Length: 104
Image (cartoon, rainbow, N blue to C red; front, side):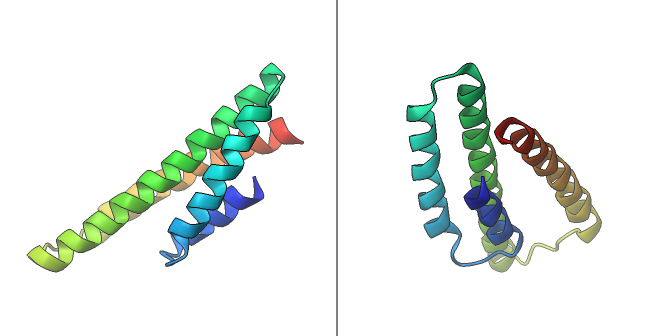
């Protein structure tokens, strides 16, 4: 969980270390999935993978949009971007809350 939270911070900050940390998190989640014995453990490991994939997708989308804006002089819409970002924050917050409850 700590590694996924670190990955989320890298995504929010658009850090260059995202891909390396994503690989580490992916390996850790795979181990968690392989060692899950109980239904609770399986649910938690599945949610960890979903959380990781959501962060990975969000990061890829952000990189893609930056490239499009640079090449096409496409104006950004700060208000729409803020609404989208706020909704993503809520989704990730819900996932984090659920996982903390499951893993504590």
